[in-house]
Image (cartoon, rainbow, N blue to C red; front, side, top):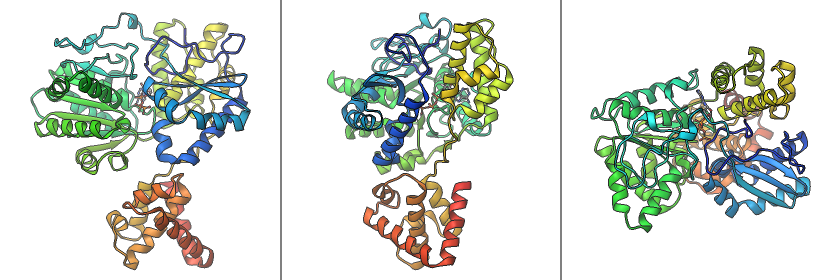
Length: 503
Ligand SMILES: Nc1ncnc2c1ncn2[C@@H]1O[C@H](COP(=O)(O)OP(=O)(O)OP(=O)(O)O)[C@@H](O)[C@H]1O
């Protein structure tokens, strides 16, 4: 029986989902959800978009019970990090919103397991050197959430892949067709044929299918004779640190560098200077010896500010593909496929097309949101034995229906659009040149970045060629003044705003 609205694999046993003080499972009321939305918005405004999007998109409200609130995250790593750095701030915000005195963080767990998951086979043990095929990699609870090895020597403690995340279950639409084609090409390249695009770098917002494609590549590798290692950046860090501690870092490096394909997920989480250096060496060693590297992250290489410039440019030198937000048609298709899979575990479970369309339109932007809504329907169906109708669905997923979010504008898009409009290059805008034909677009772009994104002045400064925040402030004030006094400039800025918003 489903209980959580997440299909994320994670450590520990299933957690029982939202629970009231009397012990029964309930959906959360609208008021706590609204308070949670406000807490998120305030936090985002305080810490800036960049930090927020690194740590908070996967933090979810689990339950409120009297004076305490429970929030869940998909991995233990994230829990520890948030506990150490943000729990006080979160508590203060919750206190102001709802008089809450305590914030508890838990690691949420996958509850809907595929048939046979209980018999999951661990692909590798640390000491093993045997190989495995995609047929015997399966999902299991684990520390970092997800990491896996397919047909490869063990690196640190190996963990299985999720067998559902394969090419055959990946649905195609306009937003992901290119990413899928590139991933397939990489996966199907015969061993020894050399890299196809190196590295292949996929980026997308949360839940748009990066992990799905990466795990599909890892699972398909052995079928084509390739040894593949799939690691989250977190697992890479743990593996490296553990190897250092046990003085086996040389073996760790050797193992990683001896494979055909290295797949690294969630690269934005790679932290720490020595780990980054090691990553950089591994990347160079693999690519220089003609091995394939595949990376996924939540932003393009240029925006991975924590990484050294030379790593970023090496990453940007391969094929960089964005998976853009899922359109309603693709969401519908993903939902239909999911319902078919759920129907195999729960005979008789079907969802009418009008309900699928309703969920696709109203229940969120990514695959995980869709899973959450379907899980909710399944629970209602199982608990009440009522068939699913549009009316029933509207009630069941009421609190998951999201007001349409304002479009997220990126500094990169502003740079591109402003540069094109003024017929200069992005590099001109980021340069130190101070000629009038460059200064004006630069200042307008900074002004738009401040107006249209949630980024702080220092963040904007960093994105504009490492400038100081006072330079950004000066530009914002200057353009504000001009817009107030000069009709032609006001119209120009307005037109640019529209171009960026409609992009
Ligand atoms: N095109 C798709 N076809 C089928 N399922 C999809 C597709 N896109 C996303 N999903 C499903 O949505 C869920 C979230 O996807 P996934 O974990 O791959 O996202 P992600 O981009 O890696 O997110 P994050 O940045 O949070 O790690 C998964 O259950 C995945 O199978």
